[in-house]
Structure formats: C-alpha cells, structure tokens
Figure 1 (tube, helix red, strand yellow):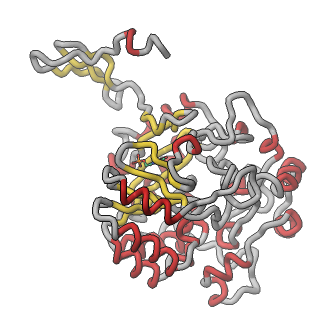
Figure 2: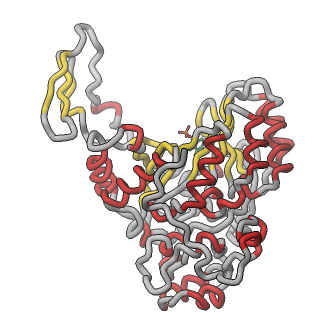
Figure 3: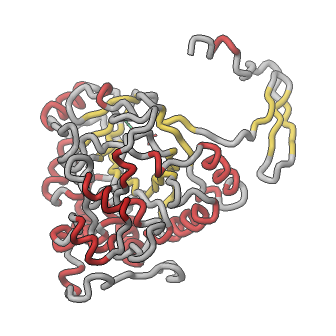
Length: 391
Ligand SMILES: *Cc1c(COP(=O)(O)O)cnc(C)c1O
C-alpha cells in the first residue's frame, strides 16, 4: 500500500538529462556528481550577486555541496525558492550578528571524549563523521562539519566505546555528525555492532538527512543491515513539503518497512517554512510518509545565520495554528536549544492560563476557557520569583 501520489512528484532528470537510470539511482554516482562550485551552480541557476558572493566564501567556512537529486528541486530563476535558501549560500553568511556563536549549543564544553557529546543524564550524541551529502547553510555544527571550517572533528572511536562501557547510565546513543548514513554499510555495521556489545545501551538512533538529500543511499541492503540492530530509530530532517519527492517517500517507506520508527526534525527558517500553511502541508505529507514530526527547532545562533532566522513569536504562532486544528501526531514539539549549552527547552503557546492550589484554568485551541479543579492537597506549581532571581 502506497500513500496516494497526490503532491509527491519526481524531479528527475531535471538538470541531468544525460544520466542513465542506473547512474541516477546509484548513490555513489550522486555523490560524485554533486554541485560543489560556483561555476557549476551557475551553469544551471541564475545566481544573484549576493549568492555569488556567498559561494565565494565557502572555501573557508562551511563547504558547498548539493546532490543532483536535491539540486533538481531548486528553481533556476527564483532566488526566493525555499529549497535554494537552505543550500545556496548568501553573502550574509560572512556577517556575524550580536549573540551568534561558532558553537551555539555549547557542544565542545560537553565532550568528555572527542566526538562524543554527553549533555543529558542517560543519552549521548556520537559524531561519527564530519561529512554530509549536501550542506545546510544554517548548520549548527558548521565549525567542524565539511572539513573546511575552523575546527576539525577528531572522533576517538576506541575512547568512545571505552567511555560508554564505563558509563552504565547511558542507555541511548544517537549517531550523527555529519551524516552517519554516508558511511559504507560495513563501517556503519561495525559501529552499531560495537555499541550493541555494550549491555546497558538499550536504544540506538541515527539522525540523518540522507533520506532527503540522497534517497538512493537507502538501499534494501542498508535497510536489511539496520534491521539487525533493533530497537533502532531514525530522525530525518525535512523543512519544506517539496523535499518529499516520490524517491524520498519510497526511501522512507523502505526504512519504515524495516521496522525503523521515523521522526522528523525541522528547523524554523525565514523564507522557507515560517508560515502556518507551509508547515501544515509539511507535517501532513510527513504523516503520509509514515514519519512522525518530532521537533521544530528555533534556528540556532550559528555564525552568519541572521538572514535565515525568524522570531520565536512566529514559531509560537505556527504551533498555535496546528495544535488542536490537526492530527496530534502531526504536531512537532517546538524547542529552543538553549544558547551556550542548556539543551533543548520546549516552548509552547500558553494553554495553562492560571494554576493554583484550587484549579487549573485552561485555554483550548479555539481560545475558549475551561476550569479543571485541582486535587486537594496538590503542591502549587506557580513560578516563585526566587527561582529566577539569580539568573
Ligand atoms: C538533541 C540531543 C540529544 C537527544 O535529545 P532528545 O530530546 O532525547 O531527542 C542528545 N544529546 C545531545 C547533545 C543533543 O543535542
């Protein structure tokens, strides 16, 4: 059973009319034919002066690379194309505005071993590679990703396995990078095997944009291999409904058929998805691809990202337009990764209008007010001023 094909479309062959079907469907061919230079981008797109300037910066900052599959989604003559804004650099990337940081989530300060971020009590982020199939211009890890930035990722695999074996409180390991699915099946299998050999690690997950940038990588062989490591979950990264092509839908279907529960992490981006209609179309399409919208991130304060950030007020307005108005499974949790290393903090429209020892006053999605009586003897949840005094 496939979902109805309405709005899912292939953009093949697009800018690559000469490619054979075998070439096109080969993920290594896709990687070899990535668009990585200004000259190549300009063969197909009418670039603006600010895009041209942005492209010249990419030798020293975050590299520029787009797979043919994803490049085909870009409209040649529309500088406001929501796909284009995610992957074609603008001159604004060189402008560092107040508050922006090289490491906005404070990961480097939470690395007990190079390549392992241990911020939360029971779970860790394992950075297995610094390479991605294509590079998102708002990348929160641009300081180490793509191999041209200010730092190098020096993941110490053996030290990480030793750390995880010692730290029996870690029950959840999240593989990211870079993008773990760029590793060969054998390399990835070797990593997953080492993790599965640690008895207290219950839960594995992979954070990847490969199903979107490079759906050809999701081969039956890869899915069969991943299936051996269950429970294994995956978080993908889609920001705009047009990214869900027939190829991406089918790749996600193969992962879901392998029993891998799929979640999506979107980033709220100006001119890409910062309006309720786009976000509604996106989350509905995700459900049809068997992907549960997981997080909507406020864009991190990464160097040179001001032109892609939108207000928290807009994010709240979008959540408000979704919650209650559509399927609960479709509504992601909106979060801000607290600048400097506080981790993900949920932000929600105020549905609890008032709460004391006697009652909770609630506002529903239509704005109507309801009261729920508090259980006698319940502790007060009112925020006491002294808890925020030493901020
Ligand atoms: C996001 C993140 C995780 C996973 O967080 P969940 O809320 O469990 O998805 C773990 N470690 C780090 C450092 C993270 O940034």
